[in-house]
Length: 376
Image (cartoon, rainbow, N blue to C red; front, top):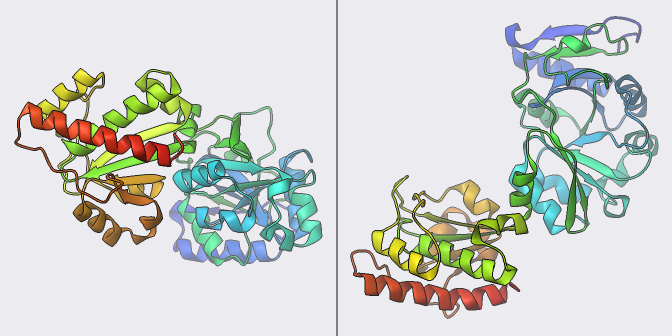
């Protein structure tokens, strides 16, 4: 570690011989209690090891972070969240799994943070969170993730201490900051603005600082996501999506367009869908008569992101469910046939308007029971 009065070692990551060498240099400096300036996908930040109180104290001092605010623990991903916050609520878990790695910091109250945080050295814990609570983030920045893979403990991040200036989206504001050991200059940050910070309190959340992720996205990603799956995403699953929206709107006493604002996201996709096809004309007509709309629907294929983000997945047939679970077996606990009795919803493609209406009525009856099972 260099003397705090000396200028930090400046490394140009974009023009170095081998970025892997810089990763190892960074890890070595952190292990010795170093404080390093580097980029996340949002802004430049200061980083230190979570195990070394001396480096953490210097980080907090350099960044000017008040004791009322916790420093941020950088974890590898959402799978580590329950290790650090065993009492994490469903809302907190949803936001972590759906928006990490990414520009989101989650802040948890002291009552929930009795996990791995308690195993850090007491002096380090006191510097990280003097007032209690815990702030967690999982960055998508490749260099930062490479460093994290090689460190024995999480990194701790702190703000660059220029409260009266714009966020540091390049490394330039770090020039001449006495007390840093290294600065890793990787050019302008990807997002160019602060990350969003959300406080989690049981099943409630509050945006403490809006950044890259806006409040609408947080609302969507914190809510219940229901996904319907069929083959081509032009008949059965889009009808189920539209009917489900109508049924939820009636229960919530709001227009179908507002259910996302109430915490419910309803989606559909197909296991063999072409991208961008409209809904079948008979499906559009039937839903219009029911008070719904499929005019703007465009088909899409099932993706891993769609499946992993969903809280409830309903397949139209046993074949669809089998294909889903073969590809993503970890979603078995919340994946079901739409029919509570285990039957298939027949494909109406190529049939007349009457057949489509019968299919819609069948889907509505099945959904009535499924929504009751979900407590809706």
